[in-house]
Length: 216
Image: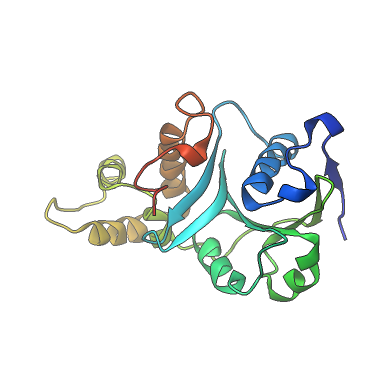
C-alpha cells in the first residue's frame, strides 16, 4: 500500500479540525496537486465543473496535459452515491481520484473501481496516497464532447474536416465528432477551451467563475 503523505507545515494549514468541509478539502487538494503533479502557470483548477448535460458535477478538475477529476467526501458525507458518481467520472476524465476522510477508507476500497485513485485526508491537514489512479479505459468520447460549446464543436469540425450542417442539433454534431475523431484531439480541444475560460488571470478562484459549464 502506497501511503506517502504530504503534510502541510503548521503555518500553511488550510483548514482547521472544526472546518474540514468539502470547500476546505478542495483548497488542500489544490496545494497537494501543485506539489505532486505536473502544474504550470498555464494549467487551471476548476471547482464544481458540470458535465453529462449538467447532471453531474466534479468537485475539482485539474486541467494540465490531461483532465484529472477529484470527488471529495468529507467526514460529514457518505459514500452512498459514489458508485453512480464514479461511473460518470470515468466516462469523461483521463484520471479519477476519490479524496475521502479517513472514516470512509474501508468502504472506499469496497466500492471504488480499481482504476480510480484513492486519497485519504485526516484531521491534521494531511493527504496520503492510498492508491494511485491508473489509466482510465472507460472514457467515452461523446461524453467528453459535452464539455464543448456549440461554437467550439464547429471549430473542431473545421479543423479536422468533420462534415456537419448548420441545421444540425448540438447532440448530432457531438455524435459526428465522437465518431470521426480519437480521444486525444477532442481532449486537447477541451483542455484549451477550459484553460481559456478558467485562466488564473481571469479569476484566482475557479469556483467563483461562472459559465455554462460551471453553473448547474
